[in-house]
Length: 231
Length: 231
DNA sequence: AAACTTCAACTTGTATACAAGTTTTTATAA
DNA sequence: TTATAAAAACTTGTATACAAGTTGAAGTTT
Image (cartoon, rainbow over all chains, first blue to last red; front, side, top):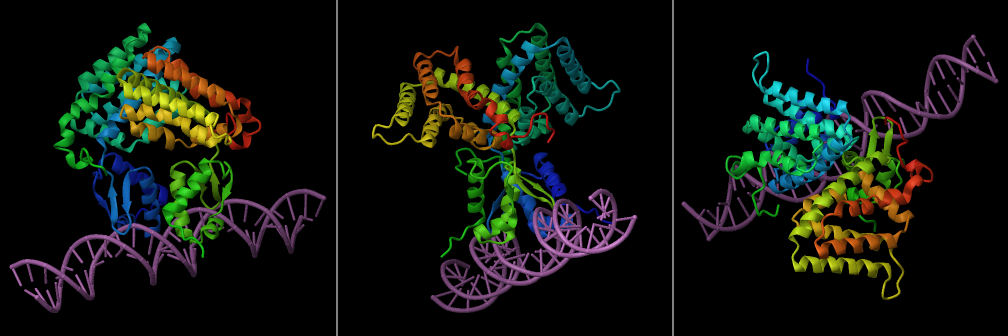
């Protein structure tokens, strides 16, 4: 017996596959092929593709075809810039208003990260899990300062940036630096020192750009819009 | 002879009408009624509504109906917070790197704003135009610091914030304060003074929240999600 | 009169046939 | 062989019929 999918399920599956790079940037999506995969007619598939287009995850060219959008390295950098700006202010406010409980939660978040790097049960290091725990520290600041929507905004909407982070996580594994940066963040929180927040966050958030570096236009150049292209 | 609309045109028209509050938050949209208005079948209309839902401009409830989303005052405030954060950094970078030409362009932007307030040809003051000229100063900073995508991001995506700004523009008319704030911005640019950017931008960007004030939960309470509602 | 049941009139969801444009292939001519 | 042109095989776009769920009103029963 085959699974029966509805519209929203299909959307979530395809969105997830695109954001996780299971479906590669630039790949052609055929409506017909998706119909067969999910055992539905073209109507719900088209509905899903329209929604994915609105999120800039696919590009529908009339009478030609549907393609998964390429990543835009320029946009990635602008989004990181935005994240540095927002997160600098959020962390500053967090530090200013942090209760002892908040500080303890931050300690706990760092502790989880070191555990994820060197699991106590000698299990394998799981990059996906490490990445997830990394984010929990940042999420703490937003939630604690009552900015949950901004955090969702950062995590979800930006198609290029989200996929860039996944690519970074899959290809480069610079765990020590990440832990070092988080340790320094905790120090700022504990000492309520706000002067070097921006420098540290710049260092931390542009990490992916440094790590991937020229790979963007070499190994992975097929995933990105060519530089100086007007498309 | 009737005009023939295609899918994208219908989308732009409805999006524009929702964002300009011509179609009020909370209003029910009937597919059938839209079919008659644009003289097309349900297929393209449904396509448009799916896309509008992805932008959080409408909410499609299966087998019940489609409703224009209400504004979320909490989200509005978080988006303003984000804009203060980003724009503070952008303006700082603009001031640091501004050429004499950039400063002159900023002077010109302010000059346009005062002209829009008191048109030389004794024409009527156009609120829409005034609002547009206001934005050109901000746009200048983003374009000059090579952050055009961030500016588009601020202008377009956020459904609640965009409509809140329109409501502010339609209902309150505090032109003098806006001009005063812009004049002060120009002074910071000319003197390359970066210390009070955040305070000034906070003052300027939260203006709508101050001006509309309690109207949000009185005159216009039908436009907003009720406080403490989980929806 | 009040409560329940049934049914008709809505709503959106899906499948399908066909329209319209693009691309590739194939056949034809130079 | 090469160039050109026609046609077949793709793609997405649209209209329509019907399916499925919700709502509210009418009718019936208590």
